[in-house]
Amino acid sequence: MNEPERFNPTAERLTANYLSVMDRIQSAASRSARPTSAIQMVGVTKYVGANIARMLVEIGCSRLAESKPQMLWEKASALSDLPIDWHLIGHLQRNKAKRTIPLISTMHSLDSARVFEEIQKVTFNCDIPLKLLLEINVSGDPEKSGMLVSDAESLLQTWKETSVQCPALTIAGLMGMGSVARGKDRARGDFERLRNLRDMWQSRYEMPLDELSMGMSDDFEEAIEEGSTMVRIGSILFQ
Ligand SMILES: *Cc1c(COP(=O)(O)O)cnc(C)c1O
Image (tube, rainbow, N blue to C red; front, side, top):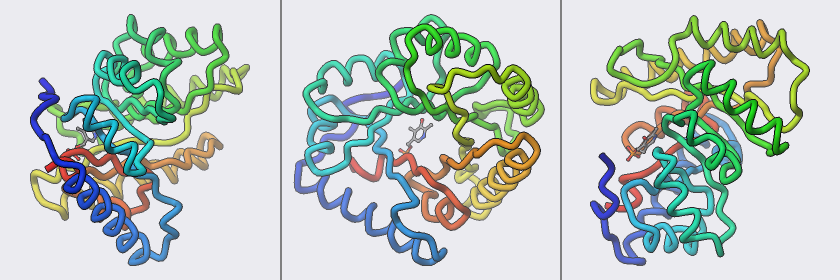
């Protein structure tokens, strides 16, 4: 379970943490000769209540993510006066698609063909623009979430063959989590594998797949060095 009130930073603390993360993103980008603008910082607010999320937006971080649809609904409603770009980074139950899709610009966690079909229904009907990233179980650890490589390949193949597509809906890239608990080198290897998969699928399926959502609090610098375009940062913002 998420514990929304696990962290309760002051505005000063939150500002300092945010600036420090942005600084580290910039350094990692320049180490790998990439412009900082190529990396989007996504603030993961699942650990905090709407009041702290509001402070984060006021500091300048207006791209926010939740891992549970219900928590996203609650925060999006409490913060509806703010111009927030909401992302979903956790599993979407099919019966929650209709209510969730209109609230978000990007879903990092597309993890099955069945969820994809449901999303297609919802977006075809409402013509809502949405970027989808395929979540890949890149470490192959059965405890981890994400699609097997073979399932992702058949989804991409199907998408390509049935391409009377709704222009609003795009498969924009891949998401993966590194095994950072087993060390930063392991995480780096996972990120490299995800990037290689992306490069291979980009040419095989002739799809842009520009986005690589990889890197969290403990491994975002390694992820950026391996080509991440979106880092999902939670705990180090709020500690
Ligand atoms: C919670 C979560 C994050 C943020 O994790 P931190 O290590 O706290 O930065 C990123 N991605 C996903 C999918 C998450 O569930």
